[in-house]
Structure formats: C-alpha cells, structure tokens
Image 1 (tube, rainbow, N blue to C red):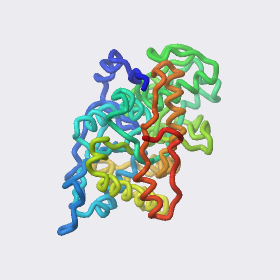
Image 2: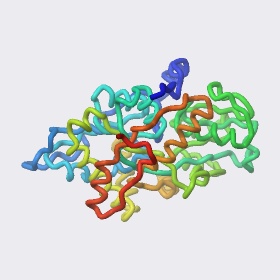
Image 3: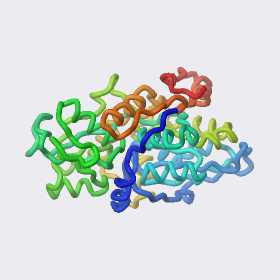
Image 4: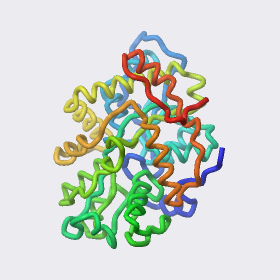
Length: 369
C-alpha cells in the first residue's frame, strides 16, 4: 500500500489548533463531549451481545442526523438489547479518529476526508467504513451584493472550514475546474480561500471579512438567514446529485471482536434512516431536540427547514464518490495518491439490508478481501 501524506500538514495543524472549535459535518478541533447521560438505558433483563457496551461518536450536526435521531429515539438501543450504547459528540474529524485509535470510541459517524486520512495514515490498519449515513448538504453561499454569478467568485474571499477538510477539497477542485489558480496550503491566488471556523463564519460574513463560504449545513442556511444567497449546491456537481458527506466507520479491532454488536448498530442505523425518510417532519424535530440538548439551543425554523431539505439520508456509503474525493485531494496537492483498497467492509451492512428486503450495496472495488 502506498503511503499517503495527511490532508493537513503538521505546520497547518499547529495553526488550526489555535482556532475555536467547530460544529461541522467533518469537524475540526479537538474536543469531545460525553453524551452518555442522554442515552436510553439498556432494557432491564434484555440479553447482552458479546460486549457490555458500545461507544459511538458523532458530531452535533444535521449531516449526522442518523446518529442524533437514532440515539434520541432509542432506535440503536432497541437493537442492542442489554448491551449499552455510550455516545460521545465531537467537534473534530481528527479528534474522532484519535478516539477511535485509542479505543475511546468503537464506531463513529464521520466525513470522507477524515476517513481517508485515518485509513491511509495507519496503512489501512485502524478502521473500516461499514456503512453510509448522509449525502449532500453542502452549498456555496455568497453576498449577493458582491457576487452575482459564478464568474464573480474570482478575486473574492471565500471561507471553507479547514485546510484539507471535505469542503475545502471540494472548493479547491471547483476552483481548478474554472481554470483559476490557488495555492492550496496558503489559500492565496485567483480566489482567497479563507479557512474559518464554521462556528464564527456567520459573524465573519456579517462583518464583511468574507464574501461567501463553501460550507455544510446548517452553516449554509445560517448564512442565507443573514442575507446570503445560495450560488451553487455541491450536489449539482455529482452524478445523480449524490456524494458522501457522512459515513460510518469502525475500529477493525472492535469489528473483529464484536461483529454482533456492529451488526446491531448497523441495523439500528438502517432502521433510523428508514424512519427519517418515512417521517421527515418528526425526524427533523427529533434531530433538533437532540441538538438543543447538546448545544443548549435549537435551530430556528428559518435555518433547519432549508438545511434539512438539502440532506439525503442513505445507507449507501457512495463508495465511488469517496474515491473521487480522494482524487480531488490528490489533484489539489493535499494528498499523495492513496491505496484505498480495503477501506470498506460492507458485509454486515449487506446482511442487514438483505434481512430488511433491501438491495445490497457495492463497494466500488474498494472492499476488504
């Protein structure tokens, strides 16, 4: 397997470490929050699986609504029986990968770039992607007084969340497709790419220090609520308007030791996604209730309604799009060409899907042998 350089350099990480924590789909920062106090207790007398507990991680974000809703509504715990689910929330892709490596969590909801980075940095030894969760929910939102068309983006200051994160790579690739030049690491060039904490991006927009942002939900809808205009929905750049924004990873050690527990979590995920898609309004309310518990503040309707509509919840990890996203990172000079063979193991997911009468999912040639 060829070695891959991390999506962010050590020098960049040192800078990023000084930034405030973010609440985004792929996450940036280093803080985790134990959410165990909000977890439904294991059913009294219910049969335990092969582990007493399973520790899961996710972000307090709408693109992680499968986890938010599944925990909030007790759908995971129902499948786990007497095995207790212990959730933690993260504000950072790197910190969730670190937690997975350290055994602080066993299973996590996370974006594609941290997944790729975590897999390649360990030479394919620490994680597997075992399922999908969400697609879409990323937009280029701009100040309509300064930017009226896509060509007007040239020469402007556009925020992304972090050097080398999923949205940053997507924006750099889009810039290159326009024939414009930007130094990936510095963000300087025909467009000024300003790496900005999603938590403060709306304030940066209001102050005029940025002219727009390529960001995930709900940040995109927060900008629209501040007068911004959606200039481009990233989904329009992908075949069938689908691309992975959140998938499910597992520690290989935990997968090997407790496949029954992993299967139960995946069954809970599949049933949660089915419930979300069948009951969108109830699911949106459940996700917002979970966010309110975690952050102390629910999202207003003007933000959550358009944000929710732009996200598709899916069991399919959309493997071919993950491979394309890796290619975009290579093209931007942020990643050496990686060997992603083996990053997926969809065996248990397909077992669950078959039992639910659903079609099995392909690994796009990137499955474990």
